[in-house]
Length: 123
Image 1 (tube, rainbow, N blue to C red):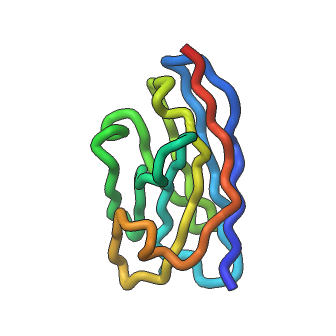
Image 2: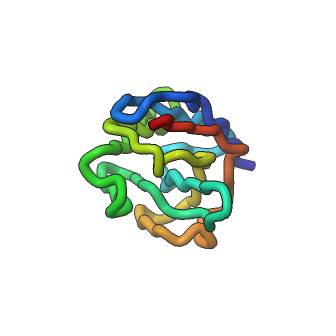
């Protein structure tokens, strides 16, 4: 059973930065695609970024501002968020799937989810 634990959320001013972490346990980390999604109040959950084996994908809304990376030695995926905007305010979730090195922006594709971490960007 895979377990995912997010951390690093908080309150930041517009233009600031945060780094989220997703700690992975329970299976062979290197074979899992790990993604970040976010859910803002009153909105559906949306794809943010995903990565595996050096491959990455980003939502258009975060390209050039967010970077996903992973440390296979620490079984952790990071989301570095720069130039934050108030519209980035949301609960951020990490998700994982044993994928054969595929990436998907579809939240239904992922099998495992963390509990989420709140990111609030003030204007």
